[in-house]
Image (cartoon, rainbow, N blue to C red; front, side):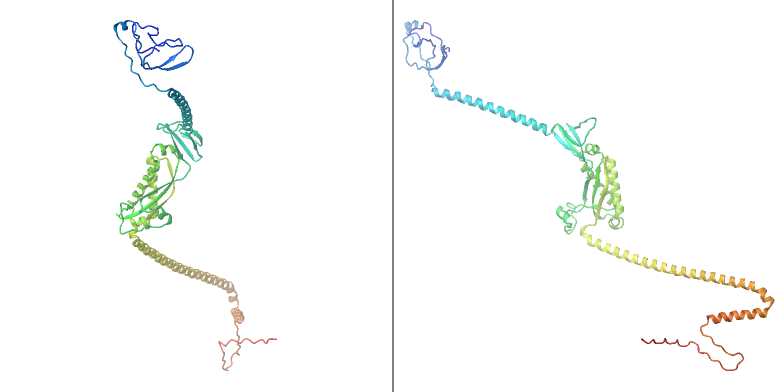
Length: 424
């Protein structure tokens, strides 16, 4: 090493002119400093030189009487401190190398996890759309991704939207229904109505005649055009809820309260569903409406009065039905009797006409015989008549002609008592 202090002019290499060591090396020294000397024989010497004494000046300085001033000294660390510093450096280097290996492994694991997180599965009842920075990605010319295992860049580069296409979806509207918890609804419990309706917490609808009703609907639908449903609208399900709310309010405003609750419930439901279909087409939602459930109820605060009206309506309908049934029964019986009388008259008439016709034909056929011998014809006719009379008569009485005796006949005799049979 070179010394920080230049050599004084006139200083030599002899015993008085410098620091000469017994091993034959010349070393320039900064007096009072720690020196590391690299020697030609291949080893390092750490020399701690404390030059507290001054050498006799030689040369010009001696002649002038100038004595060189010693440089300030610094504390020299012990030899074992340098060894500790070297071991610490080696340990620090090894620790850094191990840390770099761990960091590289972690980075590789993060990259693998990042790429693997983009794997997704589409079931047979679903379709998917991959949005890359918000724009649909076309795969094989199609935007929709079919069933199977697929990969996309993880979020936020790509966003996968899965669309159920075969499942039946439900949307429920409670904008016109009173407040009820899920537990109460599951148990079928109607919460206490309280003194009055609170519009801040309870829904309702205004009927066409200015009354209040409660209306709730559950509409079922299938997504037939997923691109329209998921891409044309930010939240397709929320749009369906708004459509149903609008339909209930629309139908309630066009119906009187009695018609919506009692007289034309089916018509009210039909208006709601027609309105839902119209709005679905207008918003181009790409869904198909399935059979749904619609419930209409009076306010709970006046439900007792509505029930009394319904009971009176039911009794009235029952009385009218019974009266109509009785009237129909009496009319049917009278019509049956009239028909029977008419039929009996027609039968008697036909029989009478046939009998008269037969007698006329018989008289016409016997008239020539009568004209030939009237007396004989009269006697023959009398005999036939008497025979017919005797044949049909149950009792016969004979009286001699021309007798002046009194003849008495007992008519309407008591019937003969049956004879008692003796048991063997």
